[in-house]
Amino acid sequence: MALGSGSASAATGTDSNSGHGVEITGWHTRALYPYVSARLCNYQSSANRFYLWIKDAQTGDNITYNGYITPSLAPGQCDEIGGYDFGRDAIQVFAQSGSLWTFGTDPISLG
Image (cartoon, rainbow, N blue to C red; front, side, top):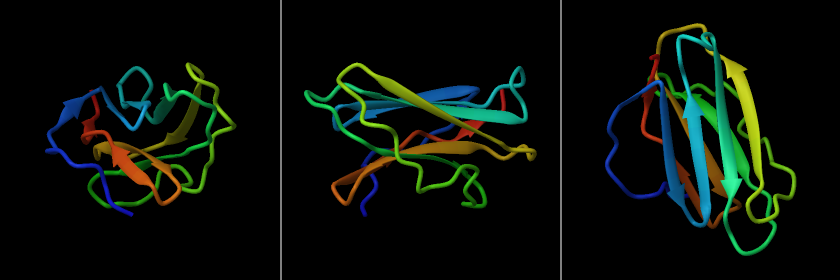
């Protein structure tokens, strides 16, 4: 499983990334703290399912279960997940399509 290429930088509060016909967004804000959330939107030409999860960017621990599979999302449909992160570490959101691709957001600091 290879992660998408690109340079990692830091974001505060929210970050998104697009690739492979999908867009992922993560939120880590003081308004929601300690709740963190992520959304995946399918912009591919057909319906598909995807893995979606949130990790602690410093420790690598999963905040949400990394085996979560979205329902079959038609083009333009989105799905969301959430979890609790009681520390102040940055988070990252990741999406995967089987063994074809994996990519993520930049680390998102509490903002």
